[in-house]
Image (cartoon, rainbow, N blue to C red; front, side, top):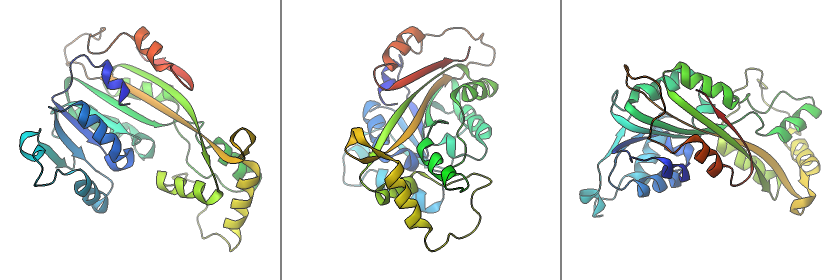
Length: 273
C-alpha cells in the first residue's frame, strides 16, 4: 500500500489512518514519512486499551522538535465529515461486522476528490487451515472473507468512483505449530456464526498442533508449515456531487497501475467502472 502512494499526483494535506493498530504502527510511520506536510488524523475504533496503545506509540514526544515544527496530529474517534483528503485503512475491512456501513463512514469522512486506500484479506486466506479443520470434522476456523469484485461493487454503491482492485497471494511459513497459532491469534478473531460455541476438550490443542505439523509441512521450505494469505488492495475516489464520473488525473492510468502492480506474487485485477 505504501508503494501505491507514488501513484497519487497531488499528495493529501490531511489524511486519516483508520485503526492503525490492526494495520501495523510501522505502516503508519511509513505513510507519515512519505507525507511530511500532511495533517494526521489517527482514528482507533477497537476499544479504550487500543486507543491508549496507539496514542502511546504514535504521539510525538514532548521533547522532539517535530512536535512543534511538524504537521499537527489529532487522535479522534472519527474524522469530521468531508474533512480528509485521504483515508488509509490497512487490514480493517474484513474484520467489520457491517462492512458497507464502514465504507459509508470512509466516504463521509472524505472531501470531494479525496481518495480511499485500503487492504483486507480475501477468500483464499487460510485455505490450508480450513482443510485441516474440515478433515478433523471441526467447524470453520475463520469467517468467510469477501471477494474483491464484491468489494468493488460495495464501493460503487457507497458513492465512490472508479474503484480499482487487485490482489496477491502470499505464502507465509512458520517453524512450529505454536508459532503459527501465535500469529493467527494476533491477526484477529473468528467471527464465523457457526464457530465452536463452547470450551475445547483437554487434548484438542495437541491434536490440532500434531495435525498442522503433519499436513502443512512444505518440502520446498525445509519442512516449515505453510499458510496462504490472499491480500486484496483497493482504492477509489469520492467525486464531487454534481460531477460526472469520468477519468480523472489524480492517479496514473489503469494500464500503468496494472503494469506496476504485477511485479510479484500471483495477482488478479478488477476495475469497477
